[in-house]
Image 1 (cartoon, rainbow, N blue to C red):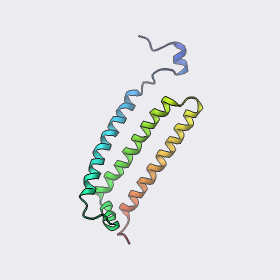
Image 2 (image 1 turned 180 degrees about the vertical axis):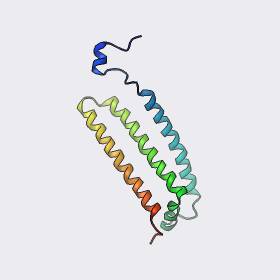
Image 3 (image 1 turned 30 degrees about the vertical axis):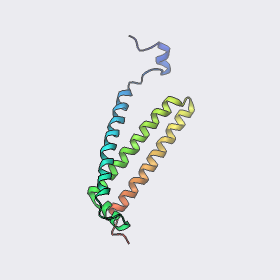
Image 4 (image 1 turned 90 degrees about the horizontal axis):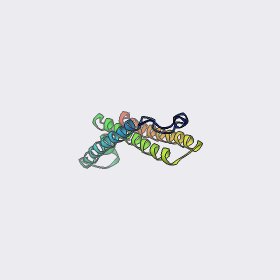
Length: 128
């Protein structure tokens, strides 16, 4: 079988040969999200207290801050991958490019804010 018509190849219609990679990234981030969310639920359930000081001290541990940062990275990347598919399937023309740019800005901004919050607590002193 061929790879489409000549005009279809010129216009960029058809496979971009990146679908399998994108599919694997979605599956890997989904798996890591499940594993890290399970860790989070177990870790929160095992906490001795849920007051501000106890949670602050809990998040200051490297054994907690690192998986939390990994969870943030994985969740936001999975979110971006999923919405990218929706945008590519349902947006057409110039609005697709604008929507993809807005999606990337939104995802990286919120992910950066979440990572900053985790790192700020992890590297701060005892709560006041």
